[in-house]
Image (tube, rainbow over all chains, first blue to last red; front, side, top):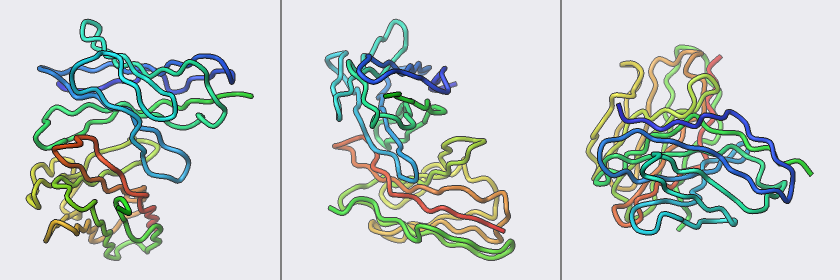
Length: 114
Length: 113
C-alpha cells in the first residue's frame, strides 16, 4: 500500500540547534514529496517539494529536505532552529501527478525551546 | 490572488441539522480537495475533484456526506444530518498541474452539539 510515515509524534530542540523531522514513504514508482507546516488555528502552509533532480531541496523559512531513494526517506532539516519554528509539520506524498492527490503523514509537533 | 477561501470559518450546529461548507479555489487551479482534521484521525482526504469532476470519494465517511463542484470556482461539502462525531476542522485545498503542490484554505471549524 502507498503510504507516508512520520515516526516521531514530537521533536524537541533548543533554539540555535539543528533540527530534523523524519519522514519515510512507501510507493511504487517515483513519488512527489512535500512538507507542510501548520500553526495553531491555521491552514497548512507549503514549505517545499521534491519532484525530480537535485536530492537536496531548499524551501521557505530556511528549511531544506533531502530525498533519499535508497532509504525511501525525505527528512526535513534546518541548520539553526528558531522558537517561531514551533508548529505541526506534515510530510505528504503524491502518487498521481496528474491529479495531485496528496496523502499526508500523521504529523510531527516541533517544539523549539528558548 | 487571495488564496483558497473557505466559509464559514466557524460553524456551530445542533445534531440533525444540515451543514454546508463552502470553498473557492485559487483561480486557474484544476484540482480541488476536501480534507478533515481531527485529533484522533489526523488529516483525512475526503474527496477530490479534477476539472470539476469527482475523481475519488472513497474517503467520504458516510452517505450523510456529499460534495459538489458546479463550476471551477466553487465547491460545497454538505453534511445531512450532522452528528457530534462530525466535529472537526474541514480544509479545502486546490492545486494546478504546473505547481503540483496543494494550497490550503484556513479551514472551517465545525462543532456539532
